[in-house]
Image 1 (tube, rainbow, N blue to C red):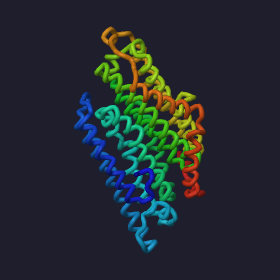
Image 2: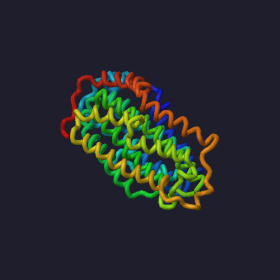
Image 3: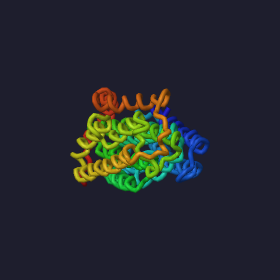
Image 4: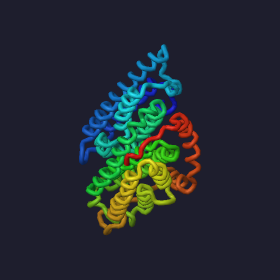
Length: 377
């Protein structure tokens, strides 16, 4: 509903409804290790509801001001995009939208719900988190924040860009200290959302194409990662890297899934993540040169913690206690085949995805028009 509706209040209704089943699934079927599932579910819900409060105030203000301008109430997204809202109001409303959608997108410093939410959730819910939940935030920020309030977005964009770099670098450093597999992917997800945010902040055709591509790429990559971690946990009953080692000897197919997800995460050419990151940097560099260079350093940090994790879990010293583990088979192979194919096809034949993205982003760029931004960093 959030992706297909053209009415803002219906969008908000579906946006809110998403939180309820996620909370129930976490507290009913989640796992309690580093944090309890109840804590993870409650933390996730509170953060998202706080973000929703900012979003609701922004939507109500849009409703009131648009009614005063048009003379009749109208919450159709396309109609609202044609209204020339006052600049001061656009900045105010876009700031609220950024806080609301940014929380769901795990924008720094509203990201703390994400790693705990991933860790406490069951495997399937973690995959939904990665593939769908955060992408609603990115979609809303682009579709509503930029499309309806382009002038306000012009003023908010440099702030988003700075916070994006905090996402990339801060979360990457946190990953270096983690020894729980889910927390590594959780903080890695926060870091990758920084690339999405800087692509959005640059507000040009190339960067926005890259931001949307990055959302797709992260969705399939993180979902594959969580699927492999979930399978490993079901068989070994641990996510502790120090307790694992040499898993590739017993589970070569699972190791292949881990390797593919890991290499996609660090943006290896030939994977869809490389296409997304490269496109974001090409588009953002002309607007935020220094910040783009800082963001690129995040790739180096990503390579460090991903390669270290893969080495410790898959190729570390073989441990006899894991000799009984059985490799993926039957239905367990479906996520590997489907998501792995998406990663490779999107990386080798990027036009299969990029053409679809460009058709939608082109409409947004036409609305933004000739607005010039950036140049501060």
